[in-house]
Length: 466
Ligand code: FAD
Image 1 (spheres, rainbow, N blue to C red):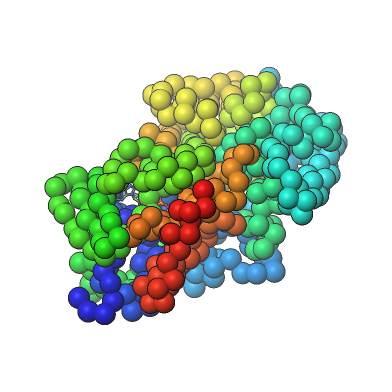
Image 2: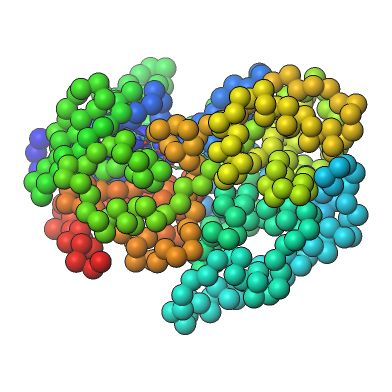
């Protein structure tokens, strides 16, 4: 222990690893990373599904080919991560009716065009709210302003495809001012690339980790400063230091702690803070949303869906909004694997997490029979990730709900004494994304570094401004 302080980083997802690397690069090497699960990567996680590696969590590098370069894209290219540009242009020719058959393409295209026109309108409303210092509104409010509230199954399905699959929550809940347009696409470009690589998207996290943690001859991380299977249960803090306790009874002391657990975890009592976090902090944490987004992979003995150019994404327009709406065929990414990916969100996700996979599979088979007819084979395997039920996550990515002010948002990341916060949910521009987590880690580490080195510590100011 010398001139630099000791820091405990809680969580080894993208933001915790990025924060720890930033501290290490600044000469703060007396760090200890405590991770609850048996791996690094957090919400970036691959799994073997019937012979291919698929992503249970983050799948796309979002925001590519724009005026600035997404730092995740740079790293993905450095390690040669295999990814495929997603092309949504043909979606109007791939919208299925509830009871089968495709909608007329020109009818669907009109709805897609009108949604694009509405998007431009809502972006203008959003910009004017900001410049007038006016109150925020939801995306639904903007739809009402333009008389564009979806009512038919196809309108609802295409609206869901556009908004819920990005935010994980419906337009009724989502802040217009903070999501239209999304800085991710405005800054880094509109393209998104689907990662399908046997090393997994998580190899980006490993790539960062190996730049500051030691590895063995096989290239595996063996640094004693990274401890896995260490679920933090208590953080005692004061103006002079911190004591962190883990579920297995271990106790660790340090001068500072950086908490990177998801905002869903912070909304539960998994980690108790002693003394309790102040009210201004809790209020800010409780007001943000962690949405739930479930990527269900299903495998078949053979393909019965269209493949080839312009068929990758398709939509099922059921009267119940969000009922197995978003589909993707993965022939490009996993040739010959005969896999489909269907995504559900929010209440549907919570419902599906609580039922057996056999029930979900039966529902999906019925939907597929509606779309493609009765003469289709039974699925041979299904994968249903359960991020919401997992006490170390409690959801998937954060969404800015209408009603949360920027001031409150900033309080989510404000330090409390020697407790610092990071995570995708602390990135004002890129919350919800992998690059948001990465950049947030750098930001939060830099504020700790400023506090230590320049005595520029902002926690007091934030406490005064309630
Ligand atoms: P996390 O990855 O949650 O890391 C926090 C770590 O803290 C975890 O490893 C956790 O185990 C650990 N932890 C929690 N509690 C404790 C405790 N008590 N003690 C010790 N450790 C603890 N982003 C994109 O850019 N593109 C996408 O396509 C995309 N799709 C997504 C799809 C899904 C299904 C999900 C779940 C997420 C998706 N995201 C996507 C979002 C992206 O994955 C996250 O924004 C990002 O990975 C979050 O990183 P983080 O470090 O903030 O949090």
